Length: 153
View (cartoon, rainbow, N blue to C red):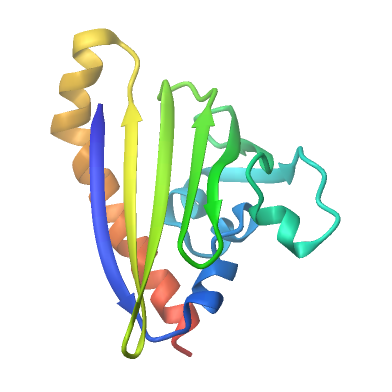
């Protein structure tokens, strides 16, 4: 399993940060989505804005190289924590993103923990540690920069 963890302080209320973490808003700032996703649509019923953040909310994402993946919210505590899990891509067995909020004096500290496993047995574990982890660390840093830029305007 590969783990990437990064935190950032954003000068915006946790409520504004929270709104950017809806699955369909990831395309606006999350670097992996921006680079690799062709389309995304909710597969769960979304009648209200709050439905986008409920446990069980799900989307189908079509990637440029990854193929079709399903994303589902597995944990959701408003303005505190949200976790997504994805399955179905060609290059990962699964991926899990957890975003944790902490109020700070001038905004919110947001921490992302990304856990995933690559297929291909021992080769996948080596590849994950040598290459994929570094790429994901860079993408997460850029994603947080994108999010900060949007929210601190």
